[in-house]
Length: 329
Image: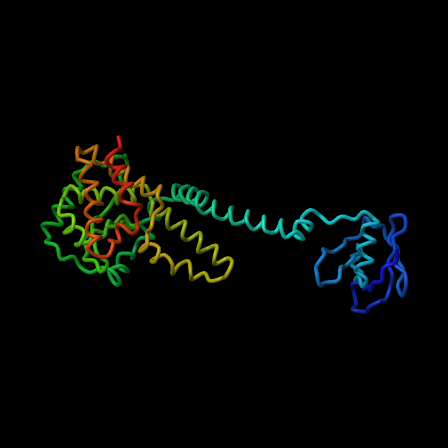
């Protein structure tokens, strides 16, 4: 079978009208150019709906097929078969399956692999890195979200002294500092990578119970001790860095850090770790766990009369957590 084609030598743009035949495993080009080549040394391009197929020679010359139908018949006669990858690409079923697998891999990596990787990276980094990253974060929050505390100094000193008198449930407790601020977003408490635990006037007044307040502080100390903040920041930065690789804007990674710290929505597993830390701290110091559960009961009750507290909106469901706190051994 003879196939009409155009021949290019790979060095100039000159086009030569030729025909292609295969005889005894040898491709024979005849016409304005004549040359022979074993078909095993030729490379056939992939199939595309609206593009001519090419047959490339080892020296860079190539044929551009004009008669596509005749060429397909020639390929069948010679037993040519596209590679597995090409065959998969040509099948819409396989393409959909590949998309589904890709989505599954991305989701599973985000849900399982990325947290594990972040935990491993955080464990290898010295604590000084946490402190360095956290420097200046409180100043940023003071400018945009927080205001100076209006609580009586003796009250804040008493809260701090009481919590410092408690025994941490794990060895090598980290350095921390309790700071009080008036909040523009309601009752809240959160920890920063620098080891600062921010407690708002609103949550102190809402709880109106020092034992319950110790539960809030113990939970946040658990975040600091377990380095959840660094792990969360590593995860978020990894996502931003991936976006930077794809779309190109290095500043996005740096600019995202304050936002990440302000919107620390931990995973269910991380929140369970911090809750377990607080439970263990209460047990080690003889404090009733009912007071720890009281935190979420009061916050939920307050949420019924107004906007949901940010402390609740960034944490898992209340009923489940209360049941876990009261049922833990």
